[in-house]
Amino acid sequence: MAAGTRGRLLTRVLRALVVTALLLWVLLPFYFLLLVALTSKSDSLRTPPRWIPTMDFGSFHSIFKSAFSSAPPSNPSDLILPGIQNSAVVAVCVAVLNVVIGSMAGYAFARFRFPGSKFIPGLMLGSQLVPVFALVVPFYVILHSLRLTDSTVGIVIAHLSFTVPFSVWMMRSFFAGIPIEVDRAAMIDGCTRWQVFYRVVLPLARPGIISVGLFSFMVSWNDFLFALVLNSKTDSTLIQPAISGLYNVREQSFGIMAAGTLLAALPTMLLALISQRFLVRGLTSGVGKV
Amino acid sequence: MAMAMPALLVTVALLAYPLVYSFWVSLHEQTLGSRRPAKWVGIDNYTSVVTDPTFFPSLTRTVLFAVAVVAGTLLLGMTFALALNQEFPGRSIVRGVLILPWSLSQITLALTFGWIFNSTFGPLNGALFDAGLIDKYVAWFASGRVALIVMAVAFIWSLVPFATLLLLGALQTVPEDLHKAARIDGAGPVRRFFFVTLPWIRDTVLVVAVLALINAFLAFALIYILTGGGPGTETTLLSWWGYTTAFRDLDLGRGAAIFYLMTLAMVILASLTAFAISGRGRQRRAA
Image (cartoon, rainbow over all chains, first blue to last red):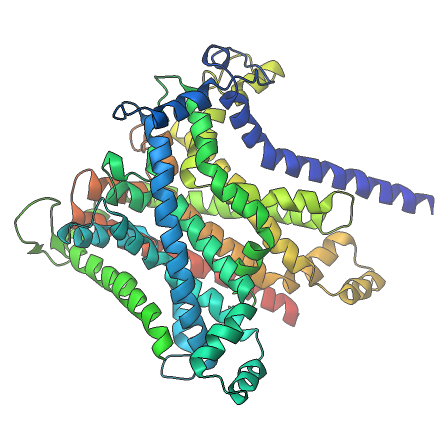
């Protein structure tokens, strides 16, 4: 009995240690970013560093200052807010198109039988293995010849290439989880196929739609390679290339770098926190059926 | 059928066609920005890539990097998942923050770890120095090997929480009866983990491993920000080599050839992983 309680105590201590390690592992890098973002430049260059932020908002201030001046961007931090704006437009377009295209195709693959209706979804999941690097050369050549580089349309098209297949796969598994009797009952009540989809099944698949929208938004927002290669001009720059210019060891403006990083990561971090159950469920929708 | 058309069109036009097209490019001599039409060179690009002195070292580095990322992600992810699989106060909060690192882009990851490992002002050196563990600041990015380890740590950091969530989801499906039966048969916690839990969640382990593998092969932004492939070519992975060949040396055909070889290496490694994880699991189940 005594050995049992001692064993249980040991388990609890061990678990507390592992959980503490996990929390530190996850949160420390964020703390280090926040620390330097909220420290004045001179304080950030002290060795060894201060461990408590001095609550100096100078870095954020200098990022936002350029948004309200009409002067052309002169240093990398001036591109952060325009980058966020451009990326927001692109990512919202990508998310909306993924929801529309993905839910239509997902419904078709879940409900109808036609040549390829079985193996095409598997192929779409498999396409996730294709590294985006294999796509970036052809996209550059094609979009360049169509004069669609440095345009919103071009980059949205490029982002659709690697988001749509996964969205179709995810929506298919969500629709497959809705009993077909729902469709039949609605048809008996006089709905057309289209009405069944639009009025009855689609509202039931709302968790799937949220997952697909969020996921494709995040993929588009976080893309660096295509944004770098396709939208290289300053006024079409997206957020990831915009902040990539902040890493300049010689300038030693670590506060601005950290503040820009946090601003760029804020949208996806908030979305992920708010909607984590949708994301996890959506991303695991294929697991176990592979 | 008609409803699937937009998706099929997108997939064929934006995925299948570019893939075929980039294969076509890889068989030609094509320079970015030149007006001359592409010249057919057959497999010359591939032979020149494979015989390049950069090729084998980059391939080896890429594979080692990927293996390290997969192993680290699985080990830490499994440890954390096992801890979170038990009831304790505050568990849902811990689970909540887990998603945060996964939501970051590779660029934000690179900037964050570039700052933490900054050799002069970074908090890691400062902390190690304050704790008395080092008496001189360490130049983390001066040696290629250490720089690669730092980048692998950054990757593992961003992948572990997500791996934990996936593995935790799988752990919760392991039937309690199996564990009870094994306990009655006298199996300790370690044996129960290897012979009951692990075979049961094998598919999820495989998914996590393959996801980590794909991500490790796509490590590009980290190199772009942190090392530029150097010192020398010591941190040049295939992805970085392909990018610089295509977009810095403007040699599209050769760049495309590198990307195809990289894809091939990734598919082989993914198949090996699948074989190792599910093959061995099946044997164990049969035994």
